[in-house]
Image (cartoon, rainbow, N blue to C red; front, side):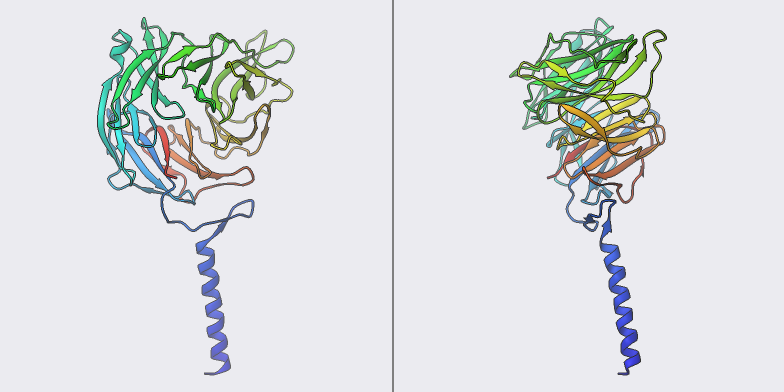
Length: 391
C-alpha cells in the first residue's frame, strides 16, 4: 500500500472518529460533559391537555439523562383530568368534581383504577377540587377545594391513599378562607405546610400542621411580610419549601398611596421553628428582583439549592441559601409565559406554557444550565404537568 493511500485512510479515520465523538457527547455552558441520549428513563413526565373542546387526555413521556423526551407507549391516555400530581405508584387527576387514580406502570403507562366524587364532601352543589398536592411521604392527597365552604370560601380537603388499590378515602376539610388558593408546600419534617396569597391587597402567609392521620390543623401564626421601603407595603403569593425548614415566598412591593407595583417582584425566604412559626430577615434591600412579571408558580429543586420561578414573562432560576438571602443565577430561560413547573431528581426542570402550547425542558445545576435537546415540545392546550422521578 502506498504512503499516500495510507495517509488518506488515516485522515478519513480521524475525521470519522471526531464526528462520532461529537455525536456522543455535548458540552454545557459550564464545561461538563453530558452522557449520550438513550439509556434507561430517569423520570416520567405527564402533561394533561385538551386537544379539542371537552376532550382531555394525558401525554406521557420518558426522560433520559440528557433531558430528551420520548413518548411512552400508548400515550396519550384518555383521561378526564386537568390538575394532577403523582406519588410514585399512582397518578391523581381531577376534573373539578372527581379525583381519579391511575396506576403508573414500570414503563410509565397509565391505567385508571379508582375515582371519587370530591365535590360531594363539601356539602354544596358548587365548587370542587381545582389543584392537587401530596405530603412528602405521598400517603395523603390534598386538594384546593374552590368555594368548598358555603359556595364562597376555599378549603383544603384531605384524602387517605390506599397503597394497594389507589383508592381515596375522604378524611376531612380544613378551616375555610377566601385566601386559600394555592397548594401547600411542606418543609422537611412533613409536619408543617405553607401557602400565601394577597386577597384584596391583604397579604397573608398561612400555615397548617399535618396530624398523624394526614388531616390539617390551621396554625395561629401570622408571619410578618418583609420590611418594605418607607411608604410601601408587600403583597405575597405562592410558596416553595426546601427539605429542611425554609420557605420561599414571592412578594410584590406596592406603593402605599396608589397601591400600584413599586418595582419588580422579589423573593423572600422564611425559616420555620419547631412549632411551625415563620420568621424572616428579608427586606426590600436584600431580596433579589425577578424578571418573570406576575409569578404563576415557584418550585424548589430537590436539593434545595435552586428556586425556579415561572411567570407571565417567562422562567428564571435563582440560588437558594436557606435563611440567607436568595441570589440571582439565570436570566430569563424563555420569554414565553410559563404556567407550571416541576423538577425531577436528575437536574431537569419542566415547564408548560398554556398560551403557546409548549413543554420546555432544561438541565440545571448550581453551576450550569442549558435547554435540553428536543425542547420545547408541542402540546395542544396543556393544562398541568407532574413528574415522577424513576430513580
